[in-house]
Length: 361
Image (cartoon, rainbow, N blue to C red):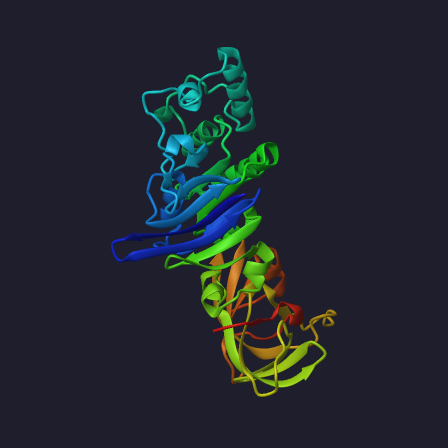
């Protein structure tokens, strides 16, 4: 387990971080300038914290009170940079084998061969970085980091410079690596899709502080604050007043509409609350079919004001009668069946179990 509790100031920016990473792939997610890369640099030893401590399986990487600060080469960390940082004058084999020593050449060769096979790099051993694609260079960087059997694996926006098809393949590679090596991994990204696909747990960081840590379901669907909800792309955030409380559910009156939702905390009548729902959880109702079970509550009428194609999905901007504008995400296959167009009057259902009352503002 990696245990972090340290502070670091760079100019006017202040990082104050407390976090535990278990035997998992944890995603450190946040906007640019939030302190993600600085966190990895401090963990690796590339930068030294001002105070605090860092321990990996009980071994101190850094402890300001005990005057401990191990250099990078003593921390047994595999570090993959966004720009790969490969040695241009070395072949794939040379890059991967760099840093490993003290074992018989045949053992080293077998380890490299296994890694190249896992990462789909067989036959490229004698090529130089300039002869590789971006995805191949990134896989070489991953192999080089893993060959030393690290106690901790750090990835700093590893797929940011790659196009979407290559990123998708590398995500599969990373999942396979995790199942094969079981190395605690901390990965930095600002890509929502990447965070959700890869993270066993997600730590949301902003302005140098951790805002929330939890499983992907907890963080994406049950944000602890309005700020976290916004970071996670939730546009449907509303304010209302509790109208009634019945057996773990509350009715909320908002401007122009009324909803029923589960209550994560005890609430009282007339209490002002903020609540949210992800755009993919707003269901467009078909007029030619009966309403499915679970969608008969929280129905709102209105019309479509804008449709934006977003590759495999469509973003629908829906304006409720006398109410707010909602963001709705619809898969392409469903969009074609619904026959939607701008100006069309429709009804939507806010799935009751998907409405989340935000615990704090």
